Image (cartoon, rainbow, N blue to C red; front, side, top):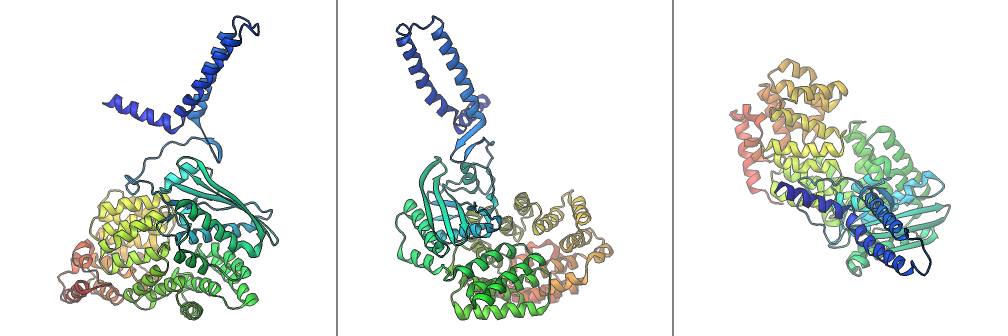
Length: 562
C-alpha cells in the first residue's frame, strides 16, 4: 500500500510538472522524424550510421526535455523554476475552486516616473471594488491581492494560494495627461488567455477605461452586467480626476499606522481640499487620519476624535449612504458609545457594500466578543476568509470563535497561522503569548520574556502582566501594569476584559469587577464567556456584585436580537 501511495504521488507530480504533456508531444514528433529518416535515407545517400545517430539524439533530447519540464514551469509569465506543491491548511482543505472567482493582481507601473506607483495601485483597487459588486463573483480583496505585488510566482501558484480560477493582470503607463493601460484575463488553472485588451486615452478617460475592464471581466465570466450591478459600479466613480489623484496619493499612508505616514496622508488630502474644494473622498480620508492618530495611541488628544466627528458630519451631508462613512462612524461609536450602536452602523455599511473586508471584520468581532453569538458570526468570517485569505488579522476571528468558547488549543492553532502570514503582527504575537499561558504550554515563559526583551512595548508589557499574574507573582505583574495601560483599557471597547482577567487572578476582585462592569457599559453582553468560558474570571464568580451583574447580562444576552 505504501509503494502504491508513492507511485500515485509520483504520477501526480509528473502531471503537475507537465512531464506527461512533454512525453505526449515529444513521442509522436520523434516517431515522425524516425519515419522520415527511414524514407529519405537512401534518396539522400545518408551514411549508414545516420539512423542510429538520430535515435541517440532523440533519446538525449527526450531526457533533456523531461528534466527541463520537471525543473521549470513555462507559462504566460515566462519560464520559472517549478515550486514544490504546498499542502493546504485547515482553512483551505477540501475546498473546490469556485467557477466564478478572480484575483486582480497589482497593475504594474511602467511609467518613466516610479512615483506614479500610487496611480497603478489605485486603478487595481478601483477595479477590485467594481468587480466586487458583481453578484456571484468571488473577488479577492485588495489587501490579499497586494501581497503579490512584484511577485515572481506563476499565476497558477498565485491562484492556488487564494483558491480562485481566474487572474486579471495588467500594466499602466501614465505620462502627463496621456494614459495607456493593458489588461489580460487568464484562466490560471489551464494557463490560457480569456481576453487581452489595450486602452489608450487621456487621464480623464480613466473611469471609462476602468468600467470597460470590469464589463469585459463580467461578460467573460458570467454574461452581461445586471442593471443594479452597473448602477453600483457607476456610483463608485469619482467625478474629479484631480481629487482622485490626491486621495490615491494618501491611500498607502493610511495603512501604515505611523505618525509620519498619517501626517503625509493629511497633507495630500488637505492639498486636494485647498485646490479643488469639498469632496466626500477627501473628507473620508481625513476622518480616517484623525481617528487612527487617536486609536493607535500616536496622539490621544480628544480633539482628534472631535475632528473625526466633524468630517463624518460632512461625509453624510454629501453622501447619506456612504459605506465608508458608516464604517468610520461605527469605529467612533465603539470609542464614544457602545458596541450595540456601533454594530448598527457596521450593519448598514455591510448592507451598502457586503464585500468590504474591514466592515466584515468588525461585524464579526462584535458578534463574537460583545454579543456572544459565535454561530451568527461564523458564516460571515468564513466569507471574509474567502475574499481576504492572506490578511493575518482576519485569522484572529476564527481564533476568537474558539477562544471565547474556551477552546484555547484550537484558538492557538489559528493564531499560529496568523503569525505565519505576518510574523510582526503585534496583536497575534500578544494573543499567542496569552494562549500559551492559558494552555499551560511550557514555551510560555520563554515566549513572554523573549517578546519583552526584543521590543518592550505596550502589548509586550501586557503579556508580561498576564504571565506573572497567572503564575502567582502579583508584585512582578504590577510592575509591568502602567497607568497608560489602565487608561487605554478604560476607554477601549475590549481591552477592559483582559485587564479584568489579570486583576482576577491577582485576587484584586474589586478592580476585576470594576473593569467587567466598564466593559458591560461598552455593550458587552457575552454571558457564556464571563459566566463560564473565561478561566481567568473564576476567582470572582462567587462575588455578590459579580453575580448581580451576571444576572443582568444573562437577561440581556437571552433577549438580544439584531
